[in-house]
Length: 124
Image (tube, helix red, strand yellow):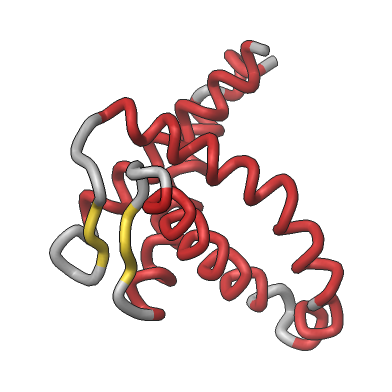
């Protein structure tokens, strides 16, 4: 349970950073409350747990041909989808194009990677 809560907080912070950086560059948040990012992180986690494995399996030949760079496209799609689903619940964000979604997914990945590395001891 502790690992789940830490992962949820890491995703919430990563999503907040991405939306804050890209707020005037193609991403518009639905809400400004900090606790809404916890709900958004939960939605993002469910999407990554359920849909991402299916997309990775379905696009396996593409991933092999692009040496894994196709994963960036999958992450972009999942970032966009998380924002759209969150918007349906009043906690998400709208993305106006591919580039903001791509940059948002990239920022979430980088921030999540570094926070996970820093909090690795806490997660075990």
